[in-house]
Amino acid sequence: MDRKTLEAHIASRKSLLCVGLDPVIDRLPEGISRDVNGVVEFCKQIIDATLEYCVAYKPNLAFFESLGPKGFEAFAKTRAHIPDTHFVIADAKRGDIGNTAKRYAEAFFNHFSCDALTVAPYMGRDSVEPFLVENNWAIVLGLTSNQGSEDFEQQKLVTGEFVWERVISQCVQWGTPENLMLVVGATKPEAIKRIRELAPQTFLLVPGIGAQGGDLEGVLKHGCIKGGGLLINSTRGIIYKSSGTDFAEAAASEAKSLRDQMAAWL
Image (cartoon, rainbow, N blue to C red; front, side, top):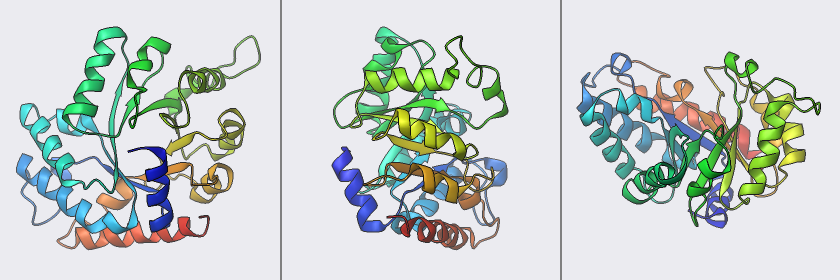
């Protein structure tokens, strides 16, 4: 999906919402079998319930891969259930160079037909470039919300820059606003103002809304630009809103609530 199409979906739905799909067998709700088949059924029902309120889905590969070979089948079935009207992010955080990176790109862009893949930039330009292809996107880890981000990302260089600032400054030179996005945690909305200085037109994928306590209002205030410029992700706060048979309805209600808050900014 290209940027123009993504922005058109954002405008028509008045939404920046991305729904994360992190299925855990032990957390599957009442009425869903606690096995691989149940994972697929759960994801399908969540997708069906939230379609009108979001513009993107972000299946996290770890939650599928942990189920073994059948987990990849579950991921493929889940991906196939998402219509072409929605942007699909494979949250796999790949990060390798040369032919290896090319194979990851082939896997997720060609075989699984995902629009984007999350990428770790630690190994540099040649680990990111294979994902910068037409109508597909590399979503590079910029400033994450985990506590461990203090170990590297939030350290200062001798230039006075934070490491995350250098990463973002470099990455936006490798790609364009048409094929590169940045991951920025919602728990650090105060940094988004600075990120917008470094990457004024780049889409930001912002996880951490909901269960992680991210500041939706702050993210919208500092990050929203013409055309949207944001994909704001919520996972547990939506998909596990209820553990009962009404889980799909509860997910839809939470997705609608978030969408309505976003609509005022679009």
